Length: 152
View 1 (tube, rainbow, N blue to C red):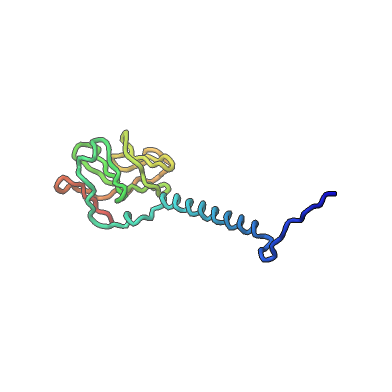
View 2 (cartoon, helix red, strand yellow):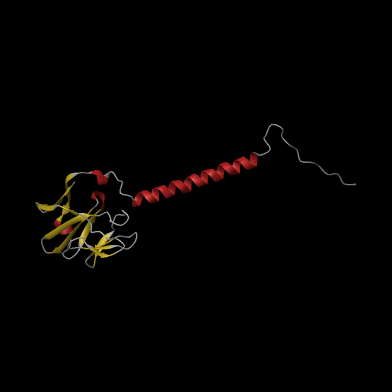
């Protein structure tokens, strides 16, 4: 004759304890994923404390900007190009398509990594969409061998 032993139940513990723990863990995971998503979206937005700096900003030496190319000054959100020797141009580094920061200059164009827009180094005009508007120009001057942009 076999005897079955019934599992013991702790009357003080709620019957749904395992369920609640799983729910809490799932909720915590969802919050973590949502938080990561917000961080990723923020990286493509135009909001940054560095972007709020106004007035003259010293970017760096002119020697950092190659002739026919350019350099991205990410913290100032400015890209400086030198289409011809001694002729410096500065533009907003924020793409006019979706607000992403461009990621560099090569082969005569300023490139945006988000959707592939490209802008001409000479005037910031659109070389390839989806952007339809040129990068806004920013006044830039050379002072004692340093590039100084005036951000408004």
